[in-house]
Length: 248
Image (cartoon, rainbow, N blue to C red; front, side):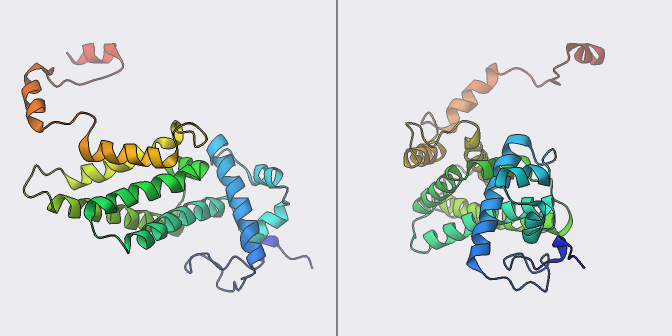
């Protein structure tokens, strides 16, 4: 009787609560092949989108048969899960390793930015997938990745909190705003940054660090306070002018 490829042994690095408990696969050749499949899937998801992509698309791009793909994963969703789980896991692991020998809070922030930028500059397709397909997983897979993403976010928040404590009573900014504003700067680079262009990764990281720490124009909040008098009053903004007229 021919065995269903989905029932074959699974990769040993799947999270325990998700992988097949019978899995005992540890051959490094299989790891390399799975990484090749995940890189190809990342590229296709980034170009075409996760939902329109089929397993046949991935099979054609990798020259791996459908049965071969199902030897490594049980579904397209599991490929997406592995891409997200691996990216968040590796970038956080790299960060923690590099922070072990760093004490200064400013240097910790520099390390985080350089680590994040260099990792995703080398994995641009994966970065786009993380940004666009964050809600495409469901159930335990979604929760597992969400927890890992939360760990990463909280680690950065800790660095910013430590940096803020050392400012000796200076103006304090909201840590939630600061944390997500920093991620917003970093996670947008897949849209415009060319790793093969004139701006190398180190220069990019230095520019982002300087921009975040000192701002584009050095100054203080008094300039902002002085400008408040000339700002327009708050209004209900809509792209549809007729809708605004109806409410007036």
